[in-house]
Image (cartoon, rainbow, N blue to C red; front, side, top):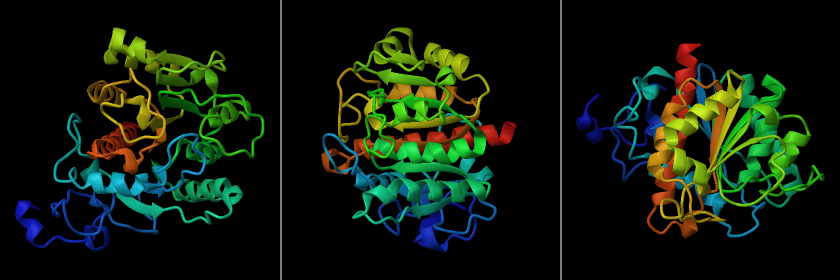
Length: 321
């Protein structure tokens, strides 16, 4: 294909026949899917399924992350012309990647949401695909982790975040985006000894045994040394990567619910995500993108790039194992 294909390519979300390859559809038109991948509920032959979870009923401050999946998909239309930068392979050409659409749920019955999300992800995993999830507030990672732990056992968590999200809360049915990793550790689905939090810059004295690399340490030691420490902790354990967009400084990602100053730069995160190649990643997500507070679209663009880097990490693992 070539750039001239933009004259004929439109609505690749529905019209593209092959799950592999670039897209030259105009970025400003057509039906929107993540990286112009095909929308499908048929996961036969799919390596990685991208799915949106438009949920923000667990937030403690600003709302709007239910609109995150749509904004991230729209921002991603700038990317599928070329192989992702900084990688020695083209994940879009080597792997069958599909947009699995969004989770359907009844917003009037919030208590049913966690079970519906877990079943949604379980369906992807049972089909033999990995998932990349577009949030949505950060609570959504908890049901996702439950599905992954059922398949892989207690999993290692690599969490980029301004907040630890480990505030004590022993009510497992309570839905809150600041307590779910406390519950994940306490319920045994996350192994704290092989888990890492990166970019933290809010106080929570009880780390639950999780290794914490705060934002100041990243700034002082740099992204390369940070990745070396992350890999040391993770080892070769099955790992789930969750990226809360507020790990980035508000200068780079203002469109989020609970922004905190002193955060990571987009350049630091790009280096770290690419240098993480080789970890035993099984799935991942990007969460807490809130378009109503994203006046320039920079946050959604960051979210789209982060999700693409997670795709590349998954592809790297698949092609080397």
